[in-house]
Length: 129
Length: 319
Image (cartoon, rainbow over the protein chains, first blue to last red):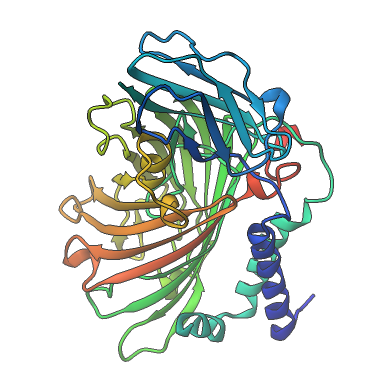
């Protein structure tokens, strides 16, 4: 079988366009969920105890298989263990905090994005008097 | 744009058919399958290792570079060339994968007609030895094969012999350093060690030595800084940038070639998105044997596991 150069060129461009469109289309597919930003901010120092930790992700996540926890410098979990995905925006997850004494705290997040890929990560923040 | 125009003027039918095949392999398998819980490519804990361009990655993956367009430094005899390469990495199981690389070359030596053709097929089988999330470490062992007579031997110097290359690749992120070193923690290094064993000691009167190959990539991840160490206010696209310097050297160890080390140093940058990454690097030869002047490359690299999580983005044995 022999293909003409023009046919081959068109087919190649079509294949490349297909791949590019699949990659670029923001709603055409799903991907791993990564941290977009958080409050308290990653690595920040806040004055006074924050009432909660809120994390925004780059993709929607599955509430049943995603969690957020906060530990103190001794590794003890200190959040209220009520982490939840915002039903009106499934890219957002929150967990409530008790009144925290000054110190460093670490946030662990583990999420399952809607395409079933799991990702996890950590970041720290500090509470100052 | 000039490069793109040049490229398509030079591409012949065989190359285009090759690109079509590679593209359709990726596209055709979107139709069926079930989702599975799968980890992300190139991750060890918080650390994301991008797919580096010059050096091999220390992880198995479902990814494809299509294309890598390279203008290497000019050779010592004045020969300059343009390369168009395709790389595919595919997992067979979550820890076992294979790779394939094929390239097309347009080479011009002063006073001679331009020569084009394939440069030879390389394949590899890789096994993920371990991934340590806590210390952001990973390692991989593999066997690469450069296949005889899969490129233009006489005109472009493609090998007329097969070479077997055991490899060891590793990666280490420095995120486990103390919090008191926040701006050091985004650093990471990946490395490759390999040894070429040619199946023929001589070709056309020239020796084919065994080579010791060693390469490293030094990376500073702004993504890691912004999302895991300290929110410094970086927004898209800057929060996904990874500046890096890659170095790869090859030293023959026998057959009278042991002083002929060659290699390049390649500073550049990679932007990593959800479905693909784009990389660009300058190419600096380490000595006269490695060329002269400045070269450069640009690469578009797709994460197949994110693009097609239900089909070809999964390990083959989970289809």
